Length: 288
Ligand SMILES: Cc1cc2nc3c(=O)[nH]c(=O)nc-3n(C[C@H](O)[C@H](O)[C@H](O)COP(=O)(O)OP(=O)(O)OC[C@H]3O[C@@H](n4cnc5c(N)ncnc54)[C@H](O)[C@@H]3O)c2cc1C
Image: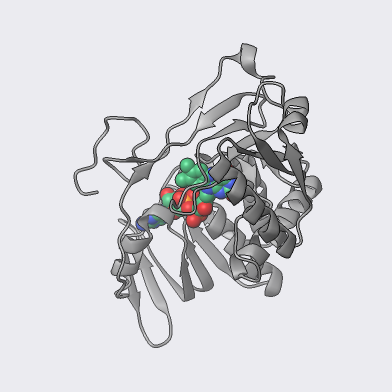
């Protein structure tokens, strides 16, 4: 059998791609190959669980548009599939005069992006978040939280109901393209597909190399570490609390995140990791 589509990776990008393909082409044959024993075991299952509203992105950019539409689609999907999510809102807090300047620039950007954002002074900030001190803040009411593992499980059910197959515990080891199709091999199985989409996240450069695609970048492992507050502090904040981002850094900054299970995490930092998929501090993967 030759599949119409083969997708490598059972994270949210692979699953969303599969769902979109089956929606556009009902009846297409589609296979997802995932190396782990369950879905969303890497980035998708280790993130902050935030449904971002898209305040950071350059107005008019594809990212700004996708983030806004993606947030709406995520909430609609969760409602349709009875997945708990909470639109708890996000507060970006300025703690220095420089951050106040950046905050105003970010506000202008948010207006160009068509987002509903409130500017708060220090007194209003204190009223809404008695445990947070700052010179001012921006409040976005559209930001939410969800458990992306649950979202992925529901997506897999949609894919399977549309005839797609999900094969877990299957590591792709070889990709050979011919003029007509592509042959994909694991340690003990071989598949053929007319089109292949690799959504391999942290391994994407290696998958590209397997397929003979020349790329000029490489994944360097960085780990984001989170602390979890003791349960007695679960009510310490009412919203998600973020800093005003530093435009020099590619990170959103350490945030206080209310998780969908009621707990509050503080993080992530970004430390050079000793393995791409190593989540414990001192575990090492020499190849990585
Ligand atoms: C610390 C951190 C916090 C974040 N917080 C948020 C947030 O709050 N909100 C948000 O929207 N985004 C957040 N993100 C970003 C988001 O998590 C990622 O953009 C998203 O999960 C990427 O999904 P993915 O499917 O590309 O990758 P992954 O989830 O990593 O999936 C890739 C999959 O490919 C599989 N794979 C790899 N190689 C092979 C192979 N050879 N054969 C078979 N399968 C293979 C892997 O096992 C994995 O399951 C965060 C990211 C980080 C790092």
